[in-house]
Each structure stands twice: as C-alpha cells, then as structure tokens.
Length: 246
Image (cartoon, rainbow, N blue to C red; front, side, top):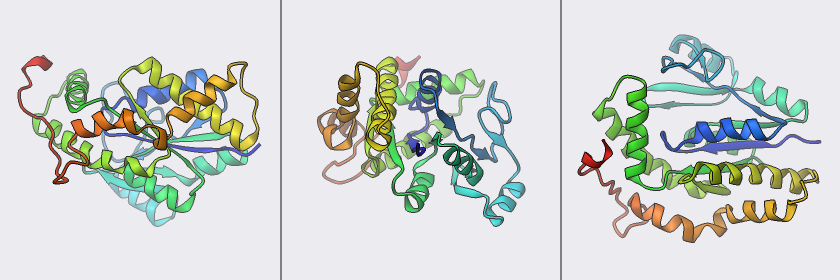
C-alpha cells in the first residue's frame, strides 16, 4: 500500500495543532513529521516532541546539506521538514502528515503535486484574535504588537486557500476533527482502495463536502470577515474594540 502525503496549513491560532493531535489519536497509520525550528520552546514544549529546536547556524548547515524537504522563514524564525521524515514514512507504506505554513506547502507541492492539501480557517478575525491572546496569556507573555502582526499575516495566508484541495472551518473542534478524519479515510479509499467502516458512504460525503469546490457557501462569510475578495482587494481586519475579549 502506498503512503499518502497530507499537508495541513493554517494561520497561527487557527487550532491546527489541536486538530492534528486529535486526528493522530483516532486514526492509525498516520505519521507526523516533527519540524525543525530556530525559535525557542514555548510553555511546556519539549525538544523532539512538538519541534526539533536548533540554532540558526545549524539550520543553515542542514539547508546547505540538502537535508530539508521544505523550509521557510516565518515571524523571524526558520522552520523546516527533514527529507528523512518523508522517506521513512513512505518507504514503510505509512501516511505522513506535514504541519507546515503556506510557504513550505508551496515548496512541497512543487516537488510532490500528488500531496493532499488541507487548509484550516478560523471562523472570523475576532475569534482568531481571542485564540491568539489566550495562547499568549498561557505562555505568560501578551505582546500586542506581535498579536497585530499575526492577525495581519493571517489574511495574507488565508488568501492562499485556493491552493488547497480541502478546506476546514474550525468553528467547532469536534466537527473539524470528524471532517479531518473523513478526509484521511476518503483519500485512503480512493487512492489505495482501503476499506472504510460501515459508515463509508457518510465518510465519503463528509470529505466531499470539504472539497474546496464544494465549500464556497461555507467559505463566503469567513473570507468576507477577513476582508478577502473585497472590491479593493485590501485586508480589512476589524482590530477595533477588544474590550469584549477579556
């Protein structure tokens, strides 16, 4: 059985990491590529669990040695996926999930156009702002300038949703997890003929509903909320009054 490469991307604070964690609990045979990064660990993060933490000098050495499948600079830090993760998973016939940003995803698609792309959207800017602020508080640091920067970047990243085959709107974690699981199971069915449980028809229907081509009505209010596809093409994040976030 051939392994499938899944790429999942989302703006910071969209809940992508939680979705990936829940998927791995519920679906077997999905390996997760632990990214390398030059940023410092946050909160309870441990080296080799959430990320491989390294120096910028060592990261550059790995780039020069051709060890990365993809790499990019995001918010002044370098992130990358080692080629070995992909080689090990696919040679064993396992699926591999890459949790990477839109820059890295573009690099992987150029090399492996058969990869399955999944983009996760927050429901609106207000919810994203709340999630980012809550995460910052949990880490013990609330930097309003950094928060604004990440919100601004979110709109630029969301504009890349068109490059992904599947779209998830993470306004309900249980529903988003079920949709992500359905996508994985459906792709296994279509690509490898892998049997699905007795609810196979429903699984395929859930996955099909997440296809970008079938998600336009669901996407419309989210994109409008982020000022995307507007008449002037400008980002119009509502950064106004934050009083109701506290």
